[in-house]
Image (cartoon, rainbow, N blue to C red; front, side, top):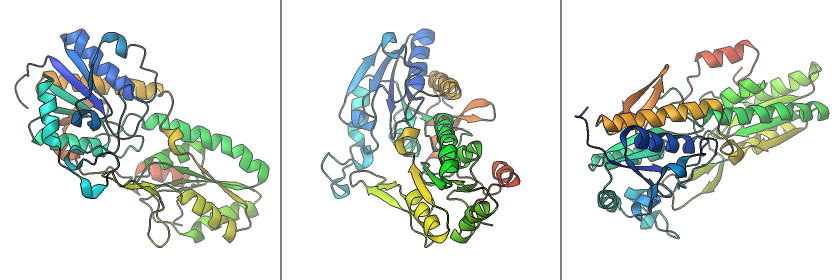
Length: 367
């Protein structure tokens, strides 16, 4: 940790996918800076796209008042702009350029003293790279996937879990009425947290996540067995990152200009078709998609985002850069970005929450 810094002008950006609670963090960073320290604040528009192309706006108190409950981000975001591998609109990966020096120049020309980067693993990995070039960076962990190393929970996760839970609750009634198996596909990428927690909260009969191998025989045995016992419906919750039996992901789209080109999606439809074909139970698939990212954040996420934003500002005042603020236990603490970058927090197949689900009869397709 370095000596206290002379911070006077702060910058903030939101990168990657949108997520409930982003505006709450922006609000906390800016208001804390203004109220407690008298700082000036600038918002970088559309994530790293704005840093590359020098698009910044000054943020006043009125700009961040009333945004606590708003979903999305008032600054905009981008999940394709990568300063070290920048691809202009209409280009592809072969046209990538390293424009990180331009970002450093734009940061310094704006007179900024610290940059708060709010985002997931991609955003924070870039943040760490920029810190290695001398920029004073502090990260704030955002993702509905809850897969960031160094924090027990990311803001946005609780809101997404509530959305999954409500969807599963609603699907129970239509599944019961038509005696169907309803397959609910969640987001989550390569981590199963969202399907796991949302599936447990919604009372899913089968939960399939990337971290626990499954077989179709097991899934069909559960669904078919329930039908034979007179429970003529089933709820199956599956994460988008679950692989097909032969090991491949189901890829919805490939984005050439993105650093992470793969967009997962479609495993739920495949699974519903398989259940339909292999059992006597009619099956339907529901892909929740981007509805999990939208809308107003829960009370928990509003509070967590506020705590993260305030602590990030405190770390800046202390001159503690190249760190991310994370929740560990009940405390928000700084975590070196070097420990976070390039790592994922996956579900331990033998963790307590999985054991709890198994104890109440939930199948993970591996029995």
